[in-house]
Length: 314
Image 1 (cartoon, one colour):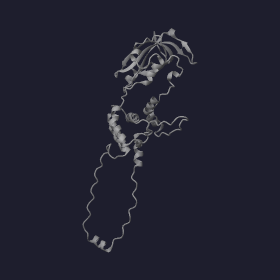
Image 2: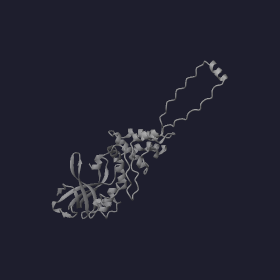
Image 3: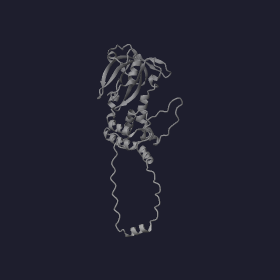
Image 4: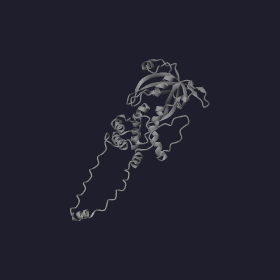
């Protein structure tokens, strides 16, 4: 047996399999050793390569770092192994899969300075949909948009111009189209106090009033100094912008050490989008001060640490 040394699409048999806890976070994964039988050619046909006796290991995580089920991967396994009901993990672990032929998509992956082939997708052996690469996953698309949106806007020069909506599809709300600093500047510009009207012109003083004014030599009392402004707290009568900034200032110190402001901002809006899905986060007033208060209280507990070792199956 030789390790597979190239990328592509292959039909393979499951020679070994097991349920394992992988990485320092102990994430559950379906692991398999695939014995390659055929390889897809550029014209779409399949060529027998069983004589090369190629094998490759696959690690398919059944849960995410936040403890949620990895439904996309579970669906891949269900499609590839039709006899599994997608529920009974013991049945999956005990099943004899030696005669089960599946289709795997393999790509080169670099981890800790080493580049090697890695199983990126699992599908039924006769799958013709680009091994699932063209299947839509709205939840994953929104997650990607929240994670990469601000980077793309920064690369494009800051301001994102909305493009025309695709015909036949609703326009997605998407992640916020402005950074916190941009939202702050806009909010402050729109909340300036209106200039007061001209005060009424006083009537000319009478003779008696003028005489009383001349007799008075006592200087007027100095005005009292204004009280120092109190910092806004969520729950008081404050604007959505102030409430958002309170939540943001409370969130920043809770982010993992080494995160940049951009990392923290992306995670902040990912959490806000998760707590209030479907909101257009381009303006602070899309949430009420009370809702920003909920963000302040709960966002810190929803931060997802970036753990490459679990993602790579190390």
